[in-house]
Image 1 (tube, rainbow, N blue to C red):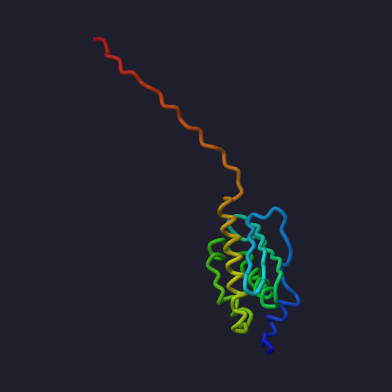
Image 2: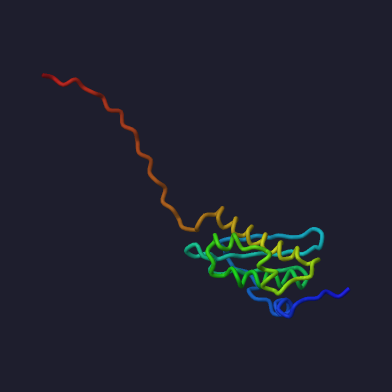
Amino acid sequence: MALNYTKKTINHFLKPQNIGKISKPDGYAQIGNMICGDQLDFFLKVEKGKIKDVKFLSFGCASNIATASILTEKVKGLTINQAKKYDWKKVVKELGGLPRQKIHCSVMAVQGLQKAIADYEKKGDGEVKKPIAKKKSVAVKKTASKK
């Protein structure tokens, strides 16, 4: 049975965008599918609440690579909140459709991105914060005033 891939899907499979690693990423996630054996790693660099750079590594099929490629293109430059809302249906639409049996690749790609964002949020924004000094309580004695 031949799968009917769009030209855009084939192009993203043959020439994936944003493939690779980011050293010292602000957010990182690895996700896999136990049934098909595909795996994705996502790396994020975030600056001022926006995704400055995003890269991925794939061990998977054409749909796995193509969905991660188009997703990384579309979320680069978005705010973290915008990227968190990016839906797998948008990924499928951007590729011009996917074979029904390959839809799970778009879901996995979005879940991987969301997991990398959650890792970033767990770490904080990367800025070193000064601890707030605790004020010492001082006991004040009331003295009777002399008249």
